[in-house]
Image (cartoon, rainbow, N blue to C red):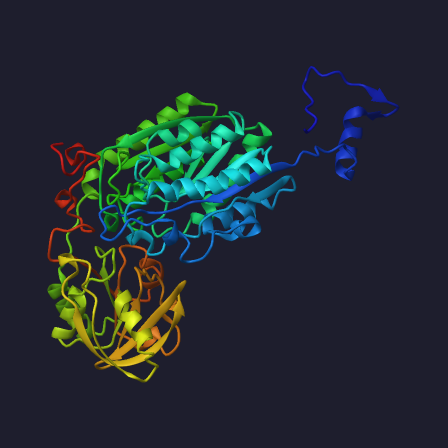
Length: 523
């Protein structure tokens, strides 16, 4: 602690030198005694954006280890962008020791998977807690979470995870976590934890930064220089994620308002959850989490202001209409004729990834120069491997359209197998060349490509194509829009009131009443 000389402090002299000068000298030469305290911090990740309305079986433990066994020890410290940000910032201090707790890599199929089984949650959290007990005593806990995980019989899985950690570390050890802004989080998490750090950008450019912020915050708590006062406000607004792009107003303005509060009030942290509508959970919807340094009045003031502002401008970010495939493809043809290429067609609503509506209309309307990445079809991939097809061999199969009516009908593709191999952590991926300079990428489960560079492999060169079909809502803007790569962006809707669309009132919610949310109730 630095010497604090007040106006009333006695002024002693030793010869012509004061004690004050001597202390300054000792500080400058590094001879003052140092605090040798090392803070032991455990790090864990358990993250899933769960689409409870998606078809398919509920993922079990085997689905969570299909991409690889859980990370352990040092490997945990590189498991996600949030964690890497936390670790990088922590290493700038000389008093933090990081301990990785066994953490799953992710579920096969990602955000296209439905409810997680209770045994999945118990199993992986149990592994973490075993490691935690072995590491005790610890001084801090960092959790890399999502906020939209859905687990059978556990209505608030992230809060439950914090509660189980709290039971072991006791009441005085700080627990902080990072979240995706699509989380559905109410006040329960902060009843057991001490801080939440939520991305303010979608696409999530700031996930690394939120990890860094969590590290500084946790260290200040461990050192006793920060005592959190928290405030949570739920905002009864429910929107599809395609409407949550922070690169345009009013979402841009909401996040800027949060940043202004943080800049104006040192020690204030303002976090906005926009909600994830395809998790049918009781915490559904938008919310605001605020932390201040021992100032409850300020925390409540900020939370109230953010709630009022978001509600006041609700009409500007709760509605959206987009062209269906036939019209979208007509717009594509016009863009090609006008030289406004590349064109991105974003099938925003297709979470399983096997829908064929846009593909069929592109073929029917004679559009060429297409790179379609990617279409989910594990059976087709199994057949390619079963027949031992090799690059250059003929390909003639029906693909896609197998998860139900909303996916459309399978489309027959006749062409050539251009490439097959492992990619994007999938063992089996194939590229099919067909028609006039068209390439179809097949994956065994949902794949959301966000940059042209992700599509540069084998014989595939994205710069050779005029049209990209992506199974993405907003993340694709990272590499195709906000870089200036694509000259035309078309968000494509589906011909039907199914899950994944902005028409949330077509869904059968069981855990919430949609009438309690704008724009579906009488407000």
